Image (cartoon, rainbow, N blue to C red; front, side, top):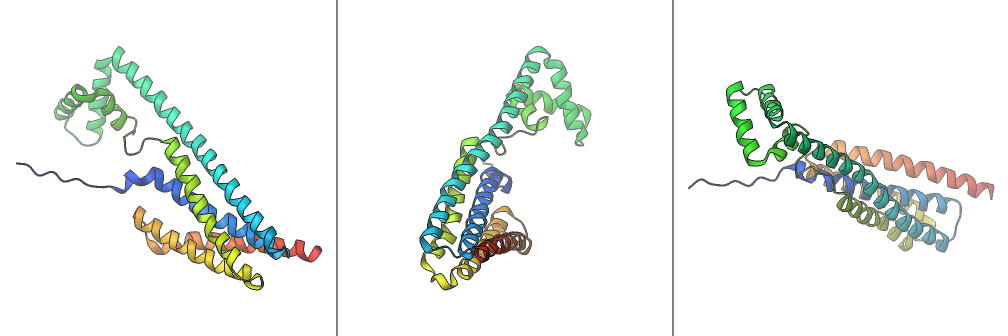
Length: 231
Protein backbone atom coordinates (compact mmCIF):
# COMPACT_ATOMS: atom_id res chain seq x y z
CA UNK A 1 0.00 0.00 0.00
CA UNK A 2 1.57 3.35 -1.01
CA UNK A 3 2.33 5.77 1.78
CA UNK A 4 0.93 9.26 1.74
CA UNK A 5 3.09 12.14 2.86
CA UNK A 6 1.33 15.39 3.67
CA UNK A 7 3.60 18.42 3.45
CA UNK A 8 2.93 21.92 4.73
CA UNK A 9 4.65 24.54 2.62
CA UNK A 10 5.39 28.13 3.59
CA UNK A 11 3.65 29.49 0.49
CA UNK A 12 0.33 28.32 1.95
CA UNK A 13 0.73 30.93 4.68
CA UNK A 14 1.63 33.85 2.45
CA UNK A 15 -1.80 35.51 2.32
CA UNK A 16 -2.70 35.71 5.98
CA UNK A 17 0.94 35.95 7.12
CA UNK A 18 1.60 39.08 5.08
CA UNK A 19 -1.56 40.77 6.35
CA UNK A 20 -0.98 39.75 9.98
CA UNK A 21 2.67 40.81 10.06
CA UNK A 22 1.94 44.11 8.33
CA UNK A 23 -0.92 44.83 10.73
CA UNK A 24 1.00 44.02 13.90
CA UNK A 25 4.07 45.93 12.78
CA UNK A 26 2.02 48.99 11.82
CA UNK A 27 0.06 48.78 15.07
CA UNK A 28 3.20 48.86 17.19
CA UNK A 29 5.05 51.52 15.20
CA UNK A 30 2.20 53.95 14.55
CA UNK A 31 0.69 53.77 18.03
CA UNK A 32 4.02 53.94 19.85
CA UNK A 33 5.12 56.84 17.66
CA UNK A 34 1.89 58.73 18.28
CA UNK A 35 2.08 58.14 22.02
CA UNK A 36 5.69 59.34 22.13
CA UNK A 37 4.88 62.41 20.07
CA UNK A 38 1.95 63.36 22.30
CA UNK A 39 3.93 62.61 25.46
CA UNK A 40 6.87 64.72 24.24
CA UNK A 41 4.50 67.67 23.81
CA UNK A 42 3.97 67.59 27.62
CA UNK A 43 0.44 66.17 27.41
CA UNK A 44 -1.23 64.67 30.46
CA UNK A 45 -1.68 60.92 30.86
CA UNK A 46 -5.39 61.18 30.04
CA UNK A 47 -4.64 62.87 26.72
CA UNK A 48 -2.02 60.25 25.94
CA UNK A 49 -4.49 57.46 26.70
CA UNK A 50 -7.18 58.99 24.49
CA UNK A 51 -4.70 59.44 21.63
CA UNK A 52 -3.51 55.84 22.00
CA UNK A 53 -7.01 54.33 22.05
CA UNK A 54 -8.06 56.47 19.08
CA UNK A 55 -4.99 55.33 17.17
CA UNK A 56 -5.79 51.68 17.94
CA UNK A 57 -9.42 51.87 16.81
CA UNK A 58 -8.86 54.07 13.76
CA UNK A 59 -5.80 52.13 12.68
CA UNK A 60 -7.51 48.75 12.95
CA UNK A 61 -10.47 49.93 10.89
CA UNK A 62 -8.19 51.54 8.32
CA UNK A 63 -6.06 48.42 7.99
CA UNK A 64 -9.13 46.21 7.61
CA UNK A 65 -10.67 48.44 4.94
CA UNK A 66 -7.42 48.94 3.05
CA UNK A 67 -6.49 45.27 3.03
CA UNK A 68 -10.01 44.22 2.05
CA UNK A 69 -10.12 46.65 -0.88
CA UNK A 70 -6.62 45.72 -2.02
CA UNK A 71 -7.15 41.97 -1.89
CA UNK A 72 -10.65 42.33 -3.40
CA UNK A 73 -9.04 43.93 -6.45
CA UNK A 74 -6.74 40.92 -6.74
CA UNK A 75 -9.70 38.56 -6.34
CA UNK A 76 -11.63 40.44 -9.06
CA UNK A 77 -8.69 40.06 -11.43
CA UNK A 78 -8.45 36.34 -10.65
CA UNK A 79 -12.17 35.84 -11.27
CA UNK A 80 -11.96 37.71 -14.58
CA UNK A 81 -9.01 35.60 -15.72
CA UNK A 82 -10.77 32.38 -14.73
CA UNK A 83 -13.98 33.43 -16.51
CA UNK A 84 -12.03 34.16 -19.71
CA UNK A 85 -10.17 30.88 -19.43
CA UNK A 86 -13.45 29.01 -18.91
CA UNK A 87 -14.86 30.60 -22.06
CA UNK A 88 -11.78 29.75 -24.09
CA UNK A 89 -11.94 26.14 -22.94
CA UNK A 90 -15.56 25.96 -24.07
CA UNK A 91 -15.03 27.61 -27.46
CA UNK A 92 -11.58 26.31 -28.51
CA UNK A 93 -10.56 23.27 -26.41
CA UNK A 94 -8.03 22.06 -28.99
CA UNK A 95 -6.05 25.29 -28.85
CA UNK A 96 -6.15 25.29 -25.06
CA UNK A 97 -4.86 21.71 -25.00
CA UNK A 98 -1.95 22.67 -27.26
CA UNK A 99 -1.27 25.71 -25.08
CA UNK A 100 -1.13 23.58 -21.92
CA UNK A 101 1.15 21.05 -23.61
CA UNK A 102 3.52 23.84 -24.69
CA UNK A 103 3.70 25.07 -21.12
CA UNK A 104 4.90 21.65 -20.00
CA UNK A 105 7.37 21.51 -22.89
CA UNK A 106 8.81 24.87 -21.85
CA UNK A 107 9.41 23.38 -18.40
CA UNK A 108 11.49 20.55 -19.81
CA UNK A 109 8.97 17.80 -20.56
CA UNK A 110 9.32 15.90 -23.82
CA UNK A 111 6.67 17.00 -26.38
CA UNK A 112 4.93 13.64 -26.61
CA UNK A 113 4.82 13.22 -22.84
CA UNK A 114 3.80 16.84 -22.38
CA UNK A 115 0.78 16.34 -24.64
CA UNK A 116 -0.16 13.15 -22.79
CA UNK A 117 0.08 14.93 -19.46
CA UNK A 118 -1.96 17.84 -20.80
CA UNK A 119 -4.66 15.46 -22.01
CA UNK A 120 -4.86 13.72 -18.64
CA UNK A 121 -4.91 16.99 -16.72
CA UNK A 122 -7.60 18.38 -19.04
CA UNK A 123 -9.72 15.26 -18.64
CA UNK A 124 -9.58 15.55 -14.86
CA UNK A 125 -9.93 19.33 -14.36
CA UNK A 126 -9.22 21.50 -17.38
CA UNK A 127 -9.92 24.84 -15.71
CA UNK A 128 -7.89 23.90 -12.63
CA UNK A 129 -4.93 22.86 -14.77
CA UNK A 130 -4.95 26.11 -16.75
CA UNK A 131 -5.51 28.20 -13.63
CA UNK A 132 -2.50 26.65 -11.94
CA UNK A 133 -0.08 26.20 -14.84
CA UNK A 134 -1.03 29.07 -17.16
CA UNK A 135 -2.33 31.76 -14.76
CA UNK A 136 -0.42 30.85 -11.61
CA UNK A 137 -3.60 30.65 -9.51
CA UNK A 138 -3.86 27.88 -6.92
CA UNK A 139 -5.95 27.30 -3.78
CA UNK A 140 -2.93 28.10 -1.60
CA UNK A 141 -2.40 31.53 -3.14
CA UNK A 142 -5.97 32.59 -3.99
CA UNK A 143 -6.96 36.06 -2.80
CA UNK A 144 -9.20 36.00 0.30
CA UNK A 145 -10.33 39.58 1.03
CA UNK A 146 -12.37 38.91 4.19
CA UNK A 147 -9.66 36.78 5.76
CA UNK A 148 -6.99 39.35 4.91
CA UNK A 149 -9.07 42.25 6.26
CA UNK A 150 -9.88 40.51 9.54
CA UNK A 151 -6.27 39.40 9.99
CA UNK A 152 -5.03 42.95 9.43
CA UNK A 153 -7.53 44.49 11.87
CA UNK A 154 -6.91 41.92 14.60
CA UNK A 155 -3.14 42.03 14.27
CA UNK A 156 -3.06 45.86 14.20
CA UNK A 157 -5.18 46.03 17.35
CA UNK A 158 -2.96 43.48 19.06
CA UNK A 159 0.19 45.34 18.08
CA UNK A 160 -1.23 48.72 19.08
CA UNK A 161 -2.38 47.40 22.46
CA UNK A 162 1.21 46.62 23.48
CA UNK A 163 2.68 50.17 23.55
CA UNK A 164 -0.67 51.50 24.79
CA UNK A 165 -0.55 49.18 27.80
CA UNK A 166 3.01 50.30 28.57
CA UNK A 167 1.96 53.95 28.31
CA UNK A 168 -0.89 53.39 30.78
CA UNK A 169 1.29 51.55 33.31
CA UNK A 170 4.64 53.37 33.12
CA UNK A 171 5.37 56.38 35.37
CA UNK A 172 4.82 59.66 33.50
CA UNK A 173 8.45 60.71 34.01
CA UNK A 174 9.81 57.78 32.00
CA UNK A 175 6.80 57.10 29.80
CA UNK A 176 8.49 57.91 26.49
CA UNK A 177 11.55 55.80 27.26
CA UNK A 178 9.40 52.90 28.48
CA UNK A 179 7.24 52.95 25.35
CA UNK A 180 10.29 53.21 23.06
CA UNK A 181 12.21 50.35 24.69
CA UNK A 182 9.17 48.10 25.00
CA UNK A 183 8.15 48.77 21.39
CA UNK A 184 11.61 47.94 20.10
CA UNK A 185 11.50 44.67 22.04
CA UNK A 186 8.04 43.93 20.62
CA UNK A 187 9.23 44.69 17.09
CA UNK A 188 12.25 42.43 17.53
CA UNK A 189 10.02 39.59 18.71
CA UNK A 190 7.67 40.19 15.79
CA UNK A 191 10.58 40.08 13.36
CA UNK A 192 11.79 36.81 14.88
CA UNK A 193 8.32 35.27 14.68
CA UNK A 194 7.96 36.44 11.11
CA UNK A 195 11.29 34.95 10.10
CA UNK A 196 10.52 31.62 11.74
CA UNK A 197 7.03 31.41 10.23
CA UNK A 198 8.05 32.61 6.80
CA UNK A 199 11.39 30.83 6.55
CA UNK A 200 13.52 34.00 6.35
CA UNK A 201 16.82 34.78 8.07
CA UNK A 202 16.11 35.99 11.65
CA UNK A 203 18.80 38.69 11.85
CA UNK A 204 17.68 40.42 8.68
CA UNK A 205 13.98 40.31 9.57
CA UNK A 206 14.60 41.66 13.07
CA UNK A 207 16.91 44.42 11.83
CA UNK A 208 14.38 45.64 9.27
CA UNK A 209 11.49 46.12 11.67
CA UNK A 210 13.62 47.49 14.54
CA UNK A 211 15.49 50.10 12.47
CA UNK A 212 12.41 51.52 10.76
CA UNK A 213 10.35 51.40 13.94
CA UNK A 214 13.00 53.22 15.95
CA UNK A 215 13.34 55.85 13.22
CA UNK A 216 9.58 56.50 13.17
CA UNK A 217 9.44 56.86 16.96
CA UNK A 218 12.46 59.18 17.02
CA UNK A 219 10.99 61.48 14.37
CA UNK A 220 7.57 61.79 16.01
CA UNK A 221 9.14 62.30 19.43
CA UNK A 222 11.25 65.14 17.99
CA UNK A 223 8.18 66.75 16.43
CA UNK A 224 6.26 66.44 19.69
CA UNK A 225 9.15 68.03 21.57
CA UNK A 226 9.13 71.00 19.20
CA UNK A 227 5.44 71.59 19.79
CA UNK A 228 5.92 71.19 23.51
CA UNK A 229 8.67 73.81 23.53
CA UNK A 230 6.61 76.13 21.34
CA UNK A 231 3.68 75.85 23.76
